[in-house]
Image (cartoon, rainbow, N blue to C red; front, side, top):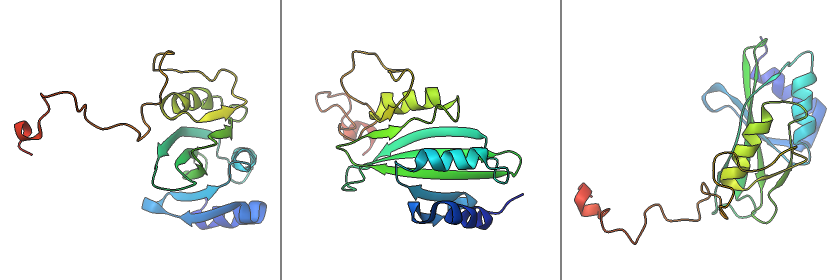
Length: 166
């Protein structure tokens, strides 16, 4: 078993100021890195004989339009079964440039996860072997999980708040 502090120390030695914002919400080590470093960091976690983070649990994103210059965040969850450890890595992207390198060469499971993240948020995973929509129709010209649309359809009159006790 390896502790979060040992992981932080290891990452600090390997990557220095390329990582930041270390925290442990609910015990899960979480930190931020730049998009130019994400593949090197994931590769190190995967190939390190000490860390052994060989399982990619999830890739997703979220949209925070109020966070100027960091409107999008791509989130990676990785797991080391051998060490019983989980880590969350975050990469912030500006609205104007949603390009980030693909992780498909490191984790085969990244293929569908990146396609889903592209499909719902429009994040462009550069180098992905088949980046296209996976759940939504190809004809869609928008990304439905972005916070660019009202929650309710203003043209409908069957969703009046008073009808629901609000």
